[in-house]
Amino acid sequence: MISCSRMIVLVCLLLPFSVTAGWNPLAKEKAEGQGKENAAVAEAVANFKNSDPGMQIFFDKAQGYAIFPTVGKGGIGIGGAYGKGEVYEREKLVGKTSVSQLTIGLQLGGQAYSEIIFFKDKTAMDRFKRGKFELGAQASAVAATAGVSADAGYNNGVAIFTLAKGGLMYEASVGGQKFSYKSIGQVKKASKPAPVEDKSN
Image 1 (tube, rainbow, N blue to C red):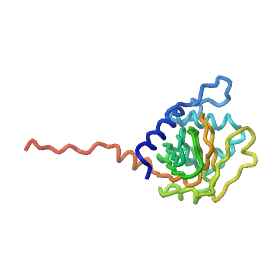
Image 2: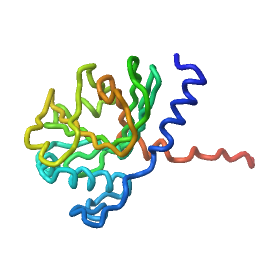
Image 3: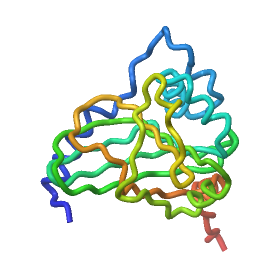
Image 4: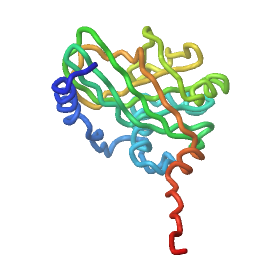
């Protein structure tokens, strides 16, 4: 179990990197053109497409994707990562998700990055939507840079890309990440206030 002092250090390491990436007036893809209500998600999608225009084929062909605008990661010996995101199927928002990760080993520092997981087909998509999706210890992500998508492929039905937002981290594996999922219907139901009991009688 992570001690209180280690947790405080972890939070301090993550705070400086929680800001979003800087505005780039020369970028071809703009956040406003992504058709997303969530501004952070829209910016993350635009950033991925600008980092490698060839990634558009994943957006066009995949059954869907989970996108995390900011995953904060930090650690000294024992590390952790956490982020919230949204899930799209055929470009329609279908749910909310979160990612968490605990890592033990040689690591020092903190970083923030965006992450996107493409699902090749309905089978892979439904596996994620069952709400207990986990990446194996050997899972790896492709750093989104120009041309990288041309050689990237699916592994066990998923393709994972990350885009650094700042910071330094010696260990940046996505292995062991665990994901939660709630459909839009579940989210709306949970956000409804409980009915107030009438005690006037």
